[in-house]
Image 1: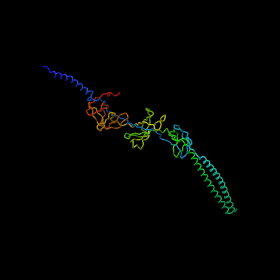
Image 2: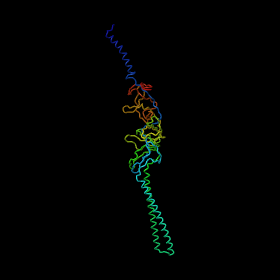
Image 3: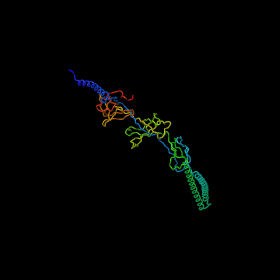
Length: 383
């Protein structure tokens, strides 16, 4: 029986369309939206990790000396500049003494007069004492009267009192002179320690008030880092823990240090814990104060527990978990995470066991029912 022309055309169209539909279905299942998602996987390991904390800090000096006069005056000279190294006891500058030198010379003269008055009073005291003793001997042999002896004793008492007054005047004059000399000495700005000048806050001729700093000196051996760490991960921070320091001006150079102390007062605004980190050896050259530094503090090693890469942890419907590989459709497993280290490994306290296979990276975001295909490397990513 012969086919009608319309039926033949229909069969021809079907013959052309069916392979095309099959081809499209094949492409959709292999490389289209219905294709398995390429993933990389890893096995959960049970091992110990050594967590570490990362923080940012600034270089500071533990001991800073702000040197200035104890009373108001005019700066006469200043012999040091910022960056100069100074020695303990070195005179850095001097305030204008105004009339202090003249007052000291006047007080020296008063002290000499007081000493002369003591010598005169001492001579009168010795003479009066001899006279009193001589008249006592004369009275014993009835060579004088008791009234005359009483007069000589009174003269001795007067001479003794005059000598005491002269000595008090000498002591007062010496104390006044010492006070002026101390004031004169305070006019000199003296370095208390071997150090480095970091601030010159005035020039000669400037009027300085009492307590105002003219020069700032630091002890270069006391440099440390004032570091800050997030309070949420600061558990375990303690003194003597090892630390690695990277100064901003020396990118890549690791300097060794240790935690000196954990500050008892935290920053309530930024929610950070403040830590002082000291260098094991003073860096050379010395970094400038205020320079930023990156600080990594190594914490004690933790007991062995299942660990997974940080990249494997995802959020799903308000839960934290990982995609566990079971067949070609992974399942989302909620987990409870513990501490992490700086190499991207995190402890799993509940939800996984050693040996479980989990998804680390995926070509697309996974969802329940997504088919996956395990590969060594996600296509299109750098090796």
